[in-house]
Image (cartoon, rainbow, N blue to C red):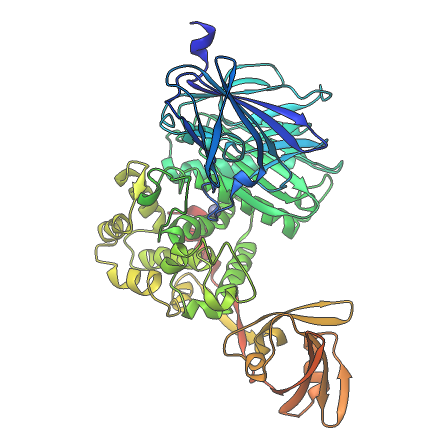
Length: 586
Ligand SMILES: [Zn+2]
């Protein structure tokens, strides 16, 4: 094999050119370009449904052929055309500014580097389906840095720098890189090698504890999908960026990029399981489950990604919602969470959905389709305008699962596995889901699909939970919920963030952004610092005056004291009854 044949027909060299300027330099070699070759950068990254215009960070693009500069014309916001001839090696160089500390783009500073190819690697139009290679250069002045990626290595040094290969552009785009000094540990789950690398770990971090729990989570997920068979990847890499404040993850075919608070990492000597650690394990479980549910089994519309524009699907309630249902449930089944913790998390999800007026405006199918302009562009009106396909989608999964279990025929686990087989671990439609439900449940579930997925009526949660020994109690809601606001309370000030549709605050005329200054009731005027202080000042008065500041004007608003409203509290009264669902999964 010659040196030339080892690299793909599209080859990128990536250098961390300037840590302080946060610049990567990319040199792209196209062995056999088309005449007037077009190159473009994706506008979005699969898994995160927002047009992010990654090209805004690309600069100084030049091209050469036969050692001579060729003219490059920019055709639109993310596409360039090189004035080249066909068939002769084309070399394109450019820089990418990388200073977004998220899992979606790229980062480079004196502490670490991270990138997705969707931010760094121009797509060579017409050659997307051919082999691609990426050479990651060692970082000057950082001999102690390592590199990790899910991409297949062709020829790398022991620190992970060197040549990587991808079968096509999609694979390259699906394999982010983590670079720097990081914690690294390896473990096997069902015989398959897994690795976790973590940037930013503090001294008290208990790596052994994390690895032990992760192994249980991964084995539970593999067994969920395959019983005794191997998962659909040869190895798997978790890349976690531990920061002061942050939360999120992006799923890939054999890796995931995660960001979480370093306070949520387990600590040596810790005896009680902190809430933050449960959240972190939920994130790990969620992204890992996606390796099956959305990376392989995926919406028919995602059979091939179009990197140039929004890719719409009505199915995010299934791929995000059902993944959200199973992320916590599998933690329970893996034994890293107890029944009470599971029920508490479920309780929280239910209240989040019940407290969002948008659940009466959009179905989860509509919310999925609109993700690009609604869920991913949250503002003060989001809770009124849409419903999260994560939280309500998880409850839709719960309803299907408990209905199937209640009717004694099957369960959602079996439906997921049946879909995996039916769709050959590939694109699926809602009709496929309907078909497996009918097959396993022995009847049509068209009514449930219409009502729960395409309708806006509340789900039959209380009735179904009771079949598992979980009782639903109603408790007085907090005053923010009773008034229909979401507000921040800091430094003795109340700031309105959201006014919920149809609530007392909306009737009074409060608006997002208002500073709620005081309450006047029965001739007494008070400065308000906490919303829960309202009943103390209002006493028996049914009507009070709320004093708010908006754009420097002081407004006096007539506020009708709201009737009592409730939130749900779930109580597991018959744990034995719930075990086949919560613990065994059969
Ligand atoms: Zn997800």
